[in-house]
Length: 374
Image (cartoon, rainbow, N blue to C red; front, side, top):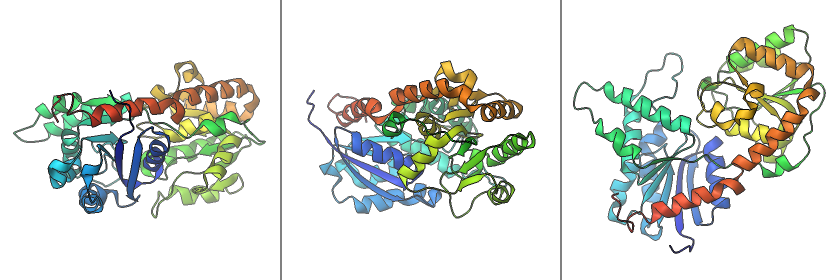
């Protein structure tokens, strides 16, 4: 096959957080020529409904590209229908799905978003999921979703989508910090570097920190992660409760300053109810900050098995106990910290991940030449 770089158009309707990190990383590291068009990371429901209309107008000539990549937060079927015969093959990367995403208190599922996921997956020429866990959850909850229909259930769609679905862990921008010496400080620093939203269960995190504090254990706290106009009220309460322990509170937009915080951290905690990959934990671990994560979601998949006993907890009580041990004697975990940092770089840095993505890009771009149905 001709190895000449191909022209790729990347459409990202929600350019923030893990979506932004993935789009930027792929564009910078791919051996192909990737043009990125994006929209701000807000109003995700309107993005799913209307981003295809915006991009259809923004892309003057889709025929100049050999492949279009788009994330799952837009309708691939709408875009392809408008672009018509000139539309090149489409590869969709699912960071999340609308079947398994937990609803906030009082929120009801809008079924239309589930159908958008289905029609997007059917319209795509290839689908990539960011973890095996995510792909499994997608098909499990898609089946349950279709079962809600009173009749004429399109159960055939499950197998049709599964035939073109693959798993491809995202690359992470982690090589530079992992090559530097971790800068853990005293008292030990606890990192929270997740989105300030309900699905990350910040209430459980701050409750655990309060219980550790009640044991007389000294620590500092950096509450990072992307914030939005509205966030759970527990953050305002925690800012007062942990005023003396707080070293950082709020999103750090400067990448190098953010990495400096991670390199100072002794432990990075997740209490998430929803996580399909976990870039924030990978970044923290690669910087020498040892994770403590629940034994659910994608975490047992992305944390190497040799570190499960150290990094995974099975209950809230076990989280508090392991966190107390880490903070009481952080030096006891230096060896695991260094070993895990090196392992995460070898698994998830873009330098190690990009070849697999570039193969998927080339295979999808030439899918018609292979005689496979679109």
